[in-house]
Image (cartoon, rainbow, N blue to C red; front, side, top):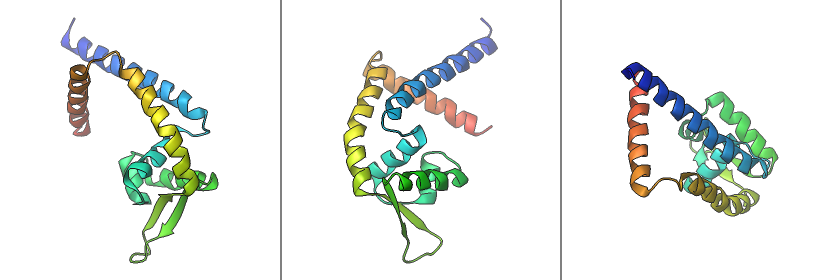
Amino acid sequence: MKEDNRNLKAFTVMFRAYQAVQDATKKDLLQYDLNQTEFGVLEFLYHYGEQPIQVIGKKILIASSSITYVIDKLEQKGFVARRACPRDRRVTYALLTYEGQILIDRIFPQHEQIINEIFEVLDQHEVETMTLLLKKVGLNAAKK
């Protein structure tokens, strides 16, 4: 097989694997009436606490125009609140509400279990190798 064909095959396999993993995690989150972006915001706030909204968008890789919409939806659901920065009027923080904290406390361990089950076909060394290789490819792609 030509090198170009191997690269194309690797890309296709990586993309299909990503789609399958995304579908499995999406299915899990739908039972909580959350999409993956909403869950990403809740998970980020769960692990890092109150954060500027702009930081959340950058960390979970969504456009600044979209993060406002996602925070609005989570606020409507009662899971997130906004707080103005007392030192800089341009900055608004997002934080988990009590209801949001209760929800993520309940669903994060189950979500983590789903991910563990997806990766159970790999041993720890394979997971570490895959992580390094995907990071290497991703960093190279970011230069393009």
